[in-house]
Amino acid sequence: MTDTGYNYAYLDEQTKRMIRRAILKAVAIPGYQVPFAGREMPLPYGWGTGGIQVTAAIIGQDDTLKVIDQGADDTTNAVSIRRFFARTAAVKTTEKTVEATVIQTRHRIPETALTENQIMVYQVPIPEPLRWMEPRETETRKMHALQEYGVMHVKLYEDIARFGHIATTYDYPVMVNDRYLMAPSPIPKFDNPKLNNSPALQLFGAGREKRIYAVPPYTPVKSLDFTDHPFEVQRWDDCCALCGATDSFLDEVITDDKGGRMYVCSDSDYCGDRRAAGHVGPQGVDADAYQRATAAE
Amino acid sequence: MTMTPPAPLLRVEGLTHYYGSRLGCGDVSFDLYPGEVLGIVGESGSGKSTLLSCLSARQEPGGGRVLYQSRHDGEIDLYSVSEPRRRLLMRTEWGIVHQNPRDGLRMTVSAGANIGERLMAVGARHYGEIRDQAIDWLGRVEISDDRTDDLPRTFSGGMQQRLQIARNLVTQPRLVFMDEPTGGLDVSVQARLLDLLRGLVSSLGLSVIIVTHDLAVARLLAHRLMVMKEGRVVESGLTDQVLDDPHHPYTQLLVSSVLQV
Image (cartoon, rainbow over all chains, first blue to last red; front, side, top):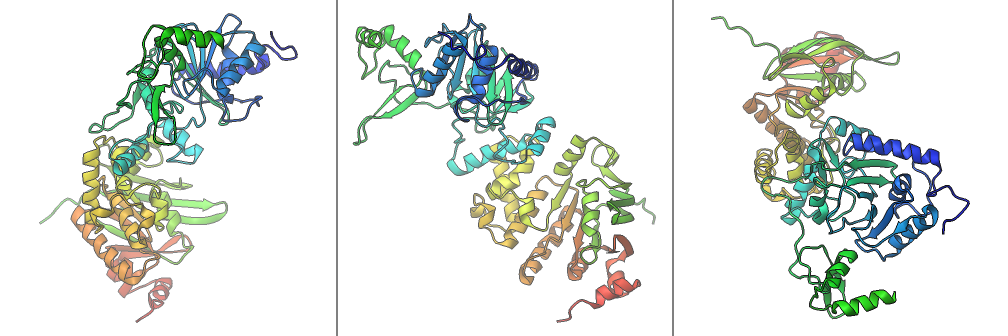
């Protein structure tokens, strides 16, 4: 059921055109932050106002939308954004990565490989990777223009000097197409390799800072590092407690106040698929029980 | 025996800058040769800092030219080359030591990262080598290597100033601009810093333009002096000559105003 009283997908057509123009420019200059006239959205800054505007500008009635928050489809933010577009844009929604044509995300890239028919929309809190080193916007723009990115390595240097390794674990700076330094939004660095040469179009929207940037399909994306401290992703000693996966990003869940903990896939769709296919982790239940539980929802 | 003199490193021709209708500095011309230390003295408001900003590519002057003999590209006109070229010059062949170390240091990252920044800015990507150079330079400015990972704000004023000098010298610049490098330090710390600077300047063959209102600093460091008053150079010459036999009434006043202890 679509709400009446709003234009299709909430934003008016002129706004959508403006955002689409910004997206086109962003795609033409991979990694470059394009300013756009961000609108007030019916949710607070920091909850995905940038991503939701990008999604509203690109979504159509034959799209299928998936929204994830920290990898999960069933968290508050994901549920309400999905419901928002179901009501204002009458789109089909899904929790299955393979069925989705548009995936709006906060903090994760799905474990399942993306395809050319999919668009990733990232919610970005702080689009400027140089911001922590250089507070002046005029100066950071100049640094981008002149490709003066040495200072970004100062931050990584500082990590190694203090912790013995590069301790930045999320929002890990990347170089897009050998030209622009880009903040990949607060995804864990575990997901950084998935940005590289991805077949899917990747769009980034920052609502508060009013910036849109993009990584077009099959664009090289390189994580910064030192030759003697190469880029590495996180590793876990455990597997997923529910599905037994060893190749996915795991969340640590505290189970009691006696130090008990379990590790589970952060990507709930990936974990569910694996369990449906019969994979069982050390604390998991078998596929039939899982399906009965999900059918009951 | 005759020798062809080396080409000047920096040639300044008729440098003039106005702030609105007020003169910042007027019609300043001089040559600076490799290995030479030029002192610019004068009271506050005499245009020293304006001149230094114009010389060090931080303030485009209203008139005149600054020509710099670069390492690879021959003589370049500072304000007619592209901005990227100018900024590259600033972090490779030049150094700027500010009066207040807070202006020249990154206060939120460690001393080692402060020194390493210029190396990383010119493409160094090997952590171990960057760190070795940082520690080496800390040693050269008499900061012990167990302070490498400390933040500059935990350093004393004198140490901050020495760190700033190390940070500038790590990429082996040929020309260093100093704005009152000993300002705000007590005399014993000043003396040590001056000693250090003298050693570094002579061992590295640096050319330095140093702005100071402290004639003792000028006497110790500078080979040549320019005396400025109300935006104009009123007297220039060898340091000893200017200080021991000042000709211009203003220079005479300046020299006689120094407190005798």
